[in-house]
Image 1: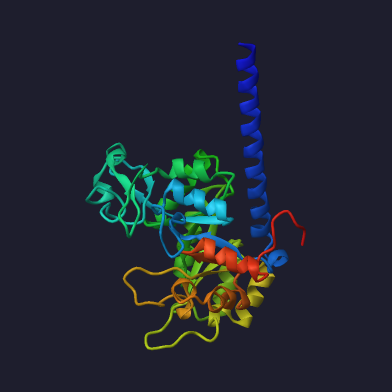
Image 2: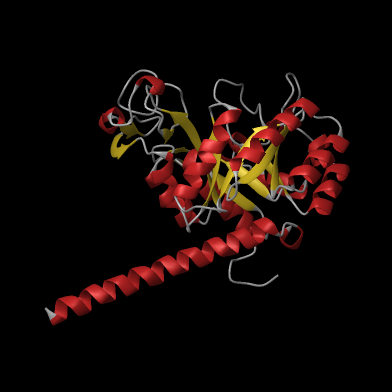
Length: 338
């Protein structure tokens, strides 16, 4: 019995040490997140849909624990996860309104109870490999990411659902480690977001989304960031139909926008992800993951956006992005001072 007690104590201490190490890594990530001006020589990487894509193909189910584990292992700072709601009101991590593409089940998520989702296995997109994982609740996913990697919740529901999301963040003990976001393009949308933000409570970080087809006035960008004091702004750079690859970052990555970011001490976030159902290169001015991975031109993607001032890149290829950025001096190793 004495040996068993000693062994049990050793296991507890070992797990505690591992968890402490993970928390310290998260604290370092938060330091770089909250002090954008100090860390403008470090590009943070966000794994899209949990990081299910690696080496240019689906290796893990999107929005799964396995995908998150891979994102953590390659050094990503954040995972983006998607949100739906079941018939009995449980917030779950799933991209589509229907189960067909990403699970072994069929039909709308909203018509299933959470208990019924236990029969739905997550599949790897592309090859269709069925895994043992099921659709996770938001709470379970945040308990998995907590202390290990930050999370960005892409709310597929309504703006009024943000307070409920914030409540789950607090219930999961992930306070301060989770972003919620909303597209803002007018004074009316800002006022609407302000009212919702007052109901969200503490513990959740809000990030505005700005798209260059709707926001053309840098004064509006400055107004929004002054009011909400975000850690980052997600900048959507569209490639116009008939245009070639962008030669510059557009108005949201121009000199004036970068000056506003410096004054506000926040990060410029760019998406190099693939948009389903859209033409190739529709996002990021044509300088997205397709160019980096499939065409083998990462310098024209990740290097280009880093030079345009982006200090956060959301990508479908987190391992490739991190490898290239580290090799070319765009990431500062953790544990070093700057």
